[in-house]
Length: 163
Image 1 (tube, rainbow, N blue to C red):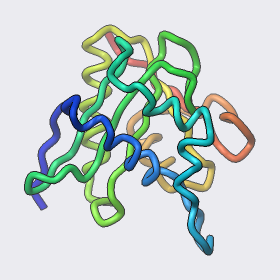
Image 2 (image 1 turned 180 degrees about the vertical axis):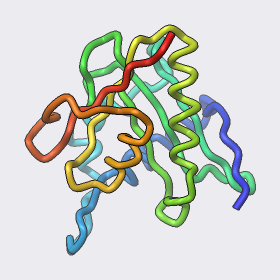
Image 3 (image 1 turned 90 degrees about the horizontal axis):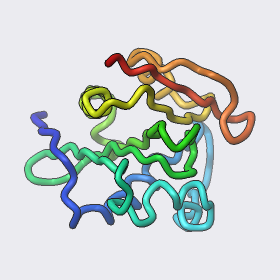
Image 4 (image 1 turned 180 degrees about the horizontal axis):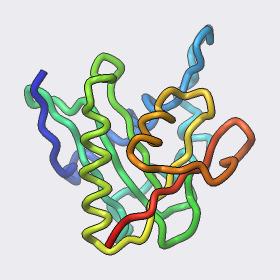
């Protein structure tokens, strides 16, 4: 499956809501559906997309197949999950389920890490549910666990960016 990665156009910022909802980790065996309202009701979720593009640290990439956006990787320095301080961009990433496990997320994250390094950022951060298999992807990319995230169900991770 051929894909391309490019910067997200400002007219596509509304897609971040869809991709944030897609990023919600649903544990194996969970029955039911996570209400979409959670991304609006939780201030840390909302901070991941609300008014995106208005802050100088806002950056977003998308993965595209056959002209369709199938994934997004974006960073901000707002008080969202994974936030450490106002100088450290925190990651959000998501792909539609049928496009996962093919290296697309890894490629988007690597490109974003390169861009952050080139822009002079010292580190980046993210949070991940402790049971989420994506934890291994983040570790392979060089992120390290520095402690619990917003609660004891998630890890807070950082990566040092070489100058």
